[in-house]
Length: 221
Length: 149
Image 1: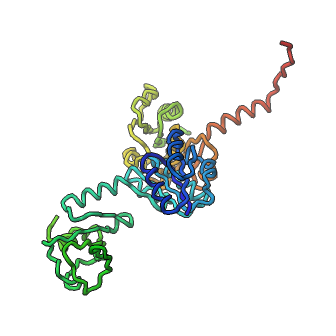
Image 2: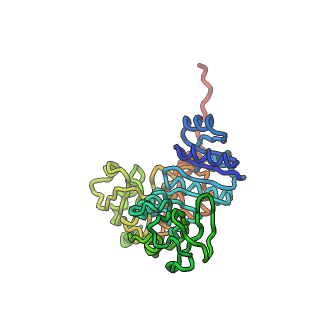
Image 3: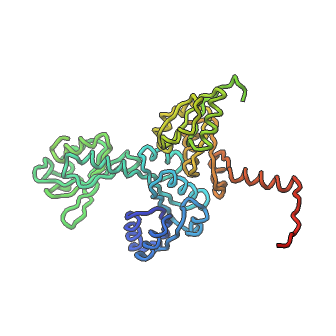
């Protein structure tokens, strides 16, 4: 897999490190000369110095053969143009843009960017939804926020501990998808009994999210 | 433009070009809203300018909404950043359905893509370049004779 990343900052450094360790071929495009030098010294990636929304720079970075591009500069307008160029001129199959203004998530989608991620939206929904629950260790909105995936820790006070999934009347449109128990990963069936300290991966809709929480933890929001 | 046709025009960027267009349009009786992220930019508007000033970043959806872009007849994006102009033009066209949208772009390398996206662009580089070329090729120039230094 060949990935182009346009942007800078610490995020880029750690992203590159993660991708490289997975064996991906990474090329970074960055406008800041000093940062380019630093990145190329510290990472096994190709670094191209220049404006990522310039087609010549994209071509130099190998846009014609890239499998994916991440546009994660701090400017929404740059990320939009980068992804549009990548899609229309270089036919990169997967384009991902970061948006800063959460409204732009929808705007980008309407302008043809398949994946637009808003860190503002992700962070704010994380904070809102886990504010009162220490048991929720992870929560990700997927499908434009139409589905929530959360990781929930069952403590001994939970009303569902000791019950089989079949006996728990889970609210409609919700699913306990996976149970993480010690080092085991269990895809549960109706007869699976929930235990204290189980970590459940639960899928819900945003509407019934609090119902599901109440059912599994016994607490209300 | 005839005087009985009054347009609602939004101008993004109040630099030399933006303020020039805003002053002219306002003077001939059109309703104008100028958007710029720096308040000091509005100093370039003349004292007769009777339109609105809106301080904000036009790549923010809310700012365009505030400017009542959904009711605009024309939007002209004149900031000094090509990408801002291209983004604002697309949002105005595709999401607010503004009938006439134009963007100033300096760099022509991306023209193919702009064209594909259906954005009407005006390039100062191209216009000035053509004027220079035209004046060289059409009017005779007295050729300098070599004068020994």
